[in-house]
Amino acid sequence: MSIKPDFFEDKVPPSFVNEVIRYIDTGELEKSSYDYYLSILKEQTGLDGVDAKEKLEELNNSYEGQDRGGRPVVPIPTLRFKHWNFHKESNDTERMISNTMHKLSVKANSVYDFDLDYNHMTLFLGKYKDDEDAHFDWHVDGHMTFQDSSARKLSFSVFLKPAKKGGNFLIQEGWEVWPKSTDITSLTLPIQEIEQSPGKVVAFPSYYNHCVTPVEEGDRYVLITWIWGPEWR
Amino acid sequence: MLKPNFWKDVVPQDFVNDVKRYIDSEVELVKAHAGYSKSGEKRFRDCSNTGKIKIWNFHEESNEIERTISNIMYKLAVKANNHFRFDLDHNFMILQLANFEEAKGGHFGWHADDHINFEQKHRKLSFSVFIQPAEKGGELLIQNGWEILPNNKEIYLPYLPSQKIEEDVGGVIAFPSYYNHCITPVEKGDRYSLVAWIFGPEWR
Image 1 (spheres, rainbow over the protein chains, first blue to last red):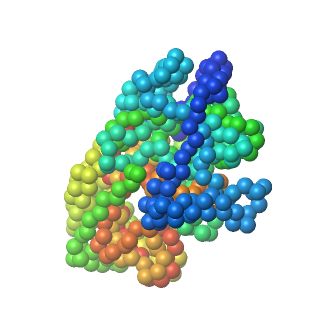
Image 2: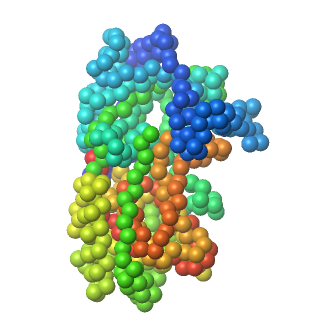
Image 3: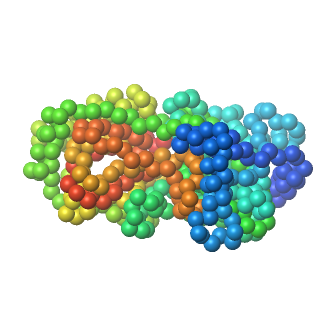
């Protein structure tokens, strides 16, 4: 029986990297909104309206006595982004990006052999600005849903321009390990930092936990892609 | 927001009593082993597991009570999979009885039963049946892995939501085998459980 890899790795050429960076810098980017986090906060705490906003601000500004150079311990994600769905591109650059990622997803899936709907693909350009402490906290992209017939199955990160400091890309593989501390209730599963070099492509199953630590110096540019498919079986 | 889903059920008290009696009379100490190796080479150290266990394969039971347990779990697996709809090989099932003893602070560190590139065969669906919860400690925590509000910890610590599963006597919970989970150290009263894993082809 074949063993599937943790990660599928590939490379895209510098001309592609430069074109995508140029496109990120010329286009209008959306700023990640608090609305999504407010909805989670409501679900977790029942807080709504002004109370929820105050709680979110409190979390976002809590320092907890830790020395992080004046940065909040818990910054709410502040990355800037642009996204579109495959076949709904608005210009040639987006079409070029979609086509490149489509080919990469077919190639990666020759290894993973997941049930994928290649035509259901979401492309996401991200810019993590250092003056915004931009980051993305621990999360999975897709999981069991039981509510929707479609789930994100395969996740791609294409590193266009890593930050000079911070902005690390961490993945938790979820393997069995010794607890690192005696406090078993804190999660102590192994995390791995993925080396980022311009043009490097990494694909992984969308149920892997991952995060991007706050950018401290130099903006971080990344191209993210998710390929959807029927739920895991 | 999409939520993780567990499948829950209950088994009758008679069954719970039979299993408990069997654990008390039969379960022998087995040096618990949990870990992952690739090509014979250990990738990580073993996860700490201090439970006393007894383990067997479906269709290879050694007595009537084990056959009863296997048959009950087989039926539960079929029922649960009406919900999960995984590709499973229902005849490929492993059963495990465990006693996490108070005297040993019995626990099982964070782990996943299976993942994308486990060697050999693949556990797809994991069951826990609560035979006798500990009086204190010995909690089953499951990490859902959903996007959540960050908590007030350092981002390098993988803070992901973990959920404490309520353990009622006879309670059954099933979850995909790639969910991370653990048993916190038992502080008072031995914890008895019945665990089953249903195997199948790799995740697709």
